[in-house]
Image (cartoon, rainbow, N blue to C red):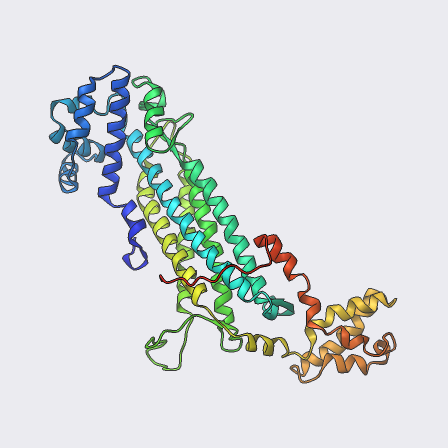
Length: 445
């Protein structure tokens, strides 16, 4: 975890103090369940809760000697609980504590990430409606294609992050399991009802079959989901980076008073935030591969996954939390230049209307092949003139084309409104409405 890219709320989930608190709760709830079943004295379970304490530094000290983190924790706990500590961890194995705790942490992290996405969705929706009718050029292969609106670009991002949230909810549900099944997962030394009790208390559900560890396909899906979300972040970040290029400059990141863009060139205003998001997305995706490789453990268990998860659990969730918050801030404060969008749209002398002319010729009885040839030969003249020629004028002066149309018909094919007539339909599909949400300005960054 790099503090530069971490926010306190998510970081707290992975602090040693939080981890050991969860360990204690798992052990104490297990004692309660054992007491209810008559396996240990009820007074012993009560004293675990009353006297249970731990010190991170002391646990670390013990672990340096015993080389086992769970034993170190239990030893420190026993120092506070006293003789009744002999009833703690009855019939359990280390993985029961470690895996259940890890899943609790992943669930809590997912809850924060869902809130992050909700905040991003709110901003994307507001900005999408703000620019629902802001006409801009759509590009394929980086080349001018046909007109669209900037609002549609943002509506697409909204739909994508809506899917991301659904996936994250599913991943959260899938990883929210509890394993208190003992060595090799047979419940030989602990009643399955203990697992059910602990699961309920910790907000989880019992793992149907745990081979001493929770199956890691659950975690692989979780981290793969985070990786897909990161890719969606990068997709929008890359779009902003392209739009901020000097030759395009249709939108740009907010540039604060006093901000500096370059140590050498005072004029620079660089898309540093979205470039940063591209880099963070690469890191989050990188954590998915070791999670996939963790699935194949030896027999009922090994600990080859353990060191991996000490990295990827905190790093992936903390980094994604930061990235989502940063993207939300970027989109909230994004500066949009509709006039530049219109100028870029008009830059190539009407070439963006070529398909409509092509289709109109086919409706006039011209074969598609001939129609394509007629439009392309005029379009290439405009292209080679760098937009100084007008496609409409060239077509009107092309006898093979002009004779197919009555007066005014060709000019009517160059109407921008033709390309935006279904924007409301798309917005209704994405947002369920064509009405803009009530205005609300975010105050936190």
